[in-house]
Amino acid sequence: MLIEHDITDVCVGMYVVEITEPKDTFSLTKPGVLNNARVIEALKRKSVTKLLIDTSKTEVIIKEVEQKINVLKPQPPRKVTPARTDVKANFFNQELVKARQVFNESKNIQKQLFHNAQHGLPLEMDPVQKITSESTDLIFNNPNALSCVINIRNKDEYLLEHSVSVSVLMTMFSVYKKIDKDIVNQLAVGAFLHDVGKIMVPDRILNKPDKLTDEEFHIMKTHASYSIEIMKNTPGISPLSLEVATLHHEKLNGQGYPFGVPAEKITLYGRMISICDIFDALTSNRCYKQGYAQVKSFSILRALAEKNELDKDLVDQFIRCMGVYPVGSVVQLESNRLAIVESHNPKDPIRPLVKPFYHLKPDHFEVGQKIDLATVTDDLIVKCVRADDFNLNMEQIIQYLAHEG
Image 1: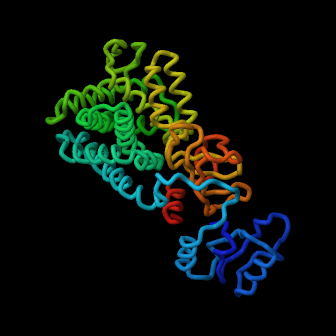
Image 2: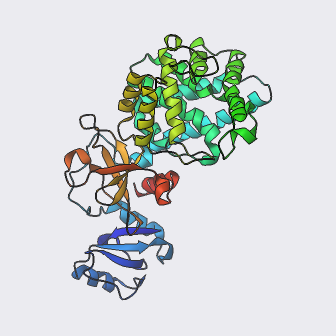
């Protein structure tokens, strides 16, 4: 892995690829391992401040290098104002731990639900209610952590992750709207179970990599009816939980399914879950398509609202809830770096707090200082991107940030 290091972090044994700062002033005779400290001191005397290191060829104990990186803070490539103090410095190392545990446990519970539904067994509601309650508590205390985690997706686990993510989004949206916590818990359960009927759809249709035929799409749509039937036959599911699952594919223009419910009969919660469901489907990688960046997905939601499929006011509220650049989304900066959004700035929504992690041209991971974009004028967001666009994946990015933190 190529990582840019400050000269103060460089150790004997590291494999140097090139001098990156000052750029085009000094150059190496050839890439190679730093054999002794005198070479490092000579580079310092020449005012070299940054080197590009290939960690896969380093001949020192990596643990020692990592300890130095954690202790010594490199100088940022631009002058920036320190990050806001209300965000913990070790967000990616500690805040995400609990969130990922909840998310992974939710997936395991979801897997058991699908198994039971497929074999005609009753759904076990105790684990569902426990994990959704735990997720709700986590979101009430710190919505950023789970928001970040749902950006880590596995293409081959969409069926499991989608329902978990929609439940998280529904909870976040409900908390944003200051809905009573008891109701939020019921909505979270309904969202958690809304797609359980998909297990009854044949794999050849569910995982088809091409566009579905009209006949196949008709079969795909039956999953909504299956979900309703399974939930009705499960003791302990509240009417509110059943309501949101029943309405998640209905549209305000009456063209939704399975019942073609008219707008006046689609409740607030039914309108909310349809937004959450579509947003997660748009941003997720699928077996047949790459997900869209969050900002692109917001524009699609608004277009659907203009067509009277979604509630326009609620779409705008959802976008404000998630933030123009949602926590956990990847953005490209003017400084030709990629950064991950770590928290919102309510007073300036287009300038969140970000954590740079990757430099473009040459492409390499780098140790970066957090930037509060609301306090700088020389490094703004160019666009919202996807990690896939740069042959990266969110799991790799989060692991790097957690390790670096």
